[in-house]
Amino acid sequence: MRTFADPLRRGLCVAPDSPAVVDTAAKLTLTFTELDLRCRSIAGGFSALGLRPGDRVALLMANGHTYIESYVALPAVGFVIVPINTRLADPEIEYILRDAGVRALITDRPPSAIENVVEHVIRVPDDFEHLIASASTPTELDELHAVDEHDLAGLFYTGGTTGPSKGVMLTHRNLIANMWNTINCCEMRADDRYLVMSPMFHAAGTYAVLASLALGATQVTVPAFDPEVVLDVIAAEGITTTLAVPTMMVALCESQSRRPRDSTSLRLLTHGASPIAVETVRRFHQLFPGTAMIHLYGATELSPLTTALADEQDELGGPRERSCGQPVLGCRVAIIDSDGNHLPAGESGEVVVRGDNVMAGYWNKPEETAAVLRNGWYRTGDVGWIDPQGFLFLVDRAKDMIVSGGENVYSTEVEQALMTHPGVLECAVYGIPDPRWGEAVAATVVAREGIDLTDTELVEHCRQLIAGFKVPRRIEVIADPLPKSAAGKILKREIREPFWEGHDARVSGA
Image (cartoon, rainbow, N blue to C red; front, side, top):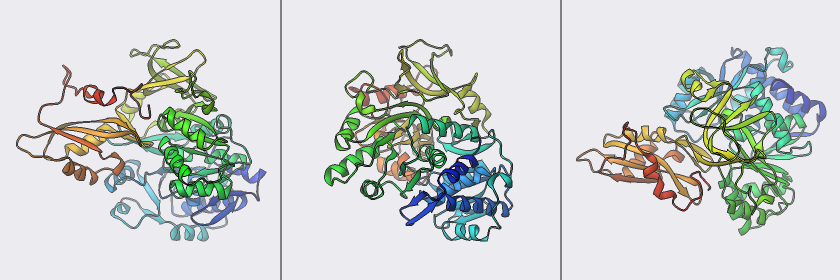
């Protein structure tokens, strides 16, 4: 298999009359035959708009059959999808649309000014269904436009550590490699009913789409995560596997303990996006005793899978209970020092990754690309060590990134928002431990002389500029300067360290 058309073609071959997608919100079930026809009509409809291979199409909508169809059909004929986080503020969305040069936007949102940035707006469901109905006789996906495995399939925007968010360029080869890793390391089967409950605008939210299609498995969607709804759907639909972030697992445990539902069909739960507390694994195993767990580690830049720890529940109390597993097939993971030298087992350093899953680079950002892609290796910015059997253990994060509830928050983005307030002289943003979210965004702000700043005022200021999950939950306003190095760099570690006393590692969920 080489491109997005191939998994869909195989699903159609091996399971033409089996359910491919069950959309619980739309109360719609599509067989593989029906899904294939709709995907070919979507491809033809967008081509009729005048879009050509390489043109970008943004996806701004909730989980559902429309998302899966767009995710598969558009790259299959050479268009480039740009999934957008539905929680972003309008200025952030507009930046992505402009930066990516998006020509068409598929959205279920009410009309807004951001639509002036693109040529075509296809509103879900009305415009989308009309486009499908009006498409000429569908042809095979690979007959419409020739697509190569090295062609760009999507731009997946992730927060910028030194400025605006960056478009991660993932090719067909990248995501097909991830498909094989998902099938193998996540133990997916043809009879699976996979629940899509993580947001599909994240790479992790769509990591099993191609695998499910290739196997002829069924994908069941919920528009957004709600623990009560999810547990009801697991029972009603006979869900066998799904992916969660640790905060979702905590919420599922709380809901299941209050009102137990039948979860006997759920044989496997994979989780990733942020490190997990051992206690969360232990409690989930107690409440869902028949469900095996797999701990996944990766990044958007890695398509996203990199390592996997199978049967995590069996590692509780053992030396590997805090490991995130061994490298997935076709992927090399190593540890390097500050000079780029590879380190032996047991020594801590920066985690680097090599393989077909490594991104092509950042969209229109050659300097940022060169900083992380060196000699074929992707530098994750995470600090960890590897044991003699190749199990990876993370101990710190070199990048100034905060993972709050599975969402990546880069401190510079928040600092830029704070610094636009006229009363802020300087600031530092960092992560502090949080029992619910793993990490919470915190900030220390130095007010300009004579200015009386309040944390409430600064929070409201940030809400106008950045997504709600990026807004600091704790802001301390001080008068003295922030601690700095001799070179003038703010020493965030000195500010952050007191909050992490008593924790084994300086990463979320630790």
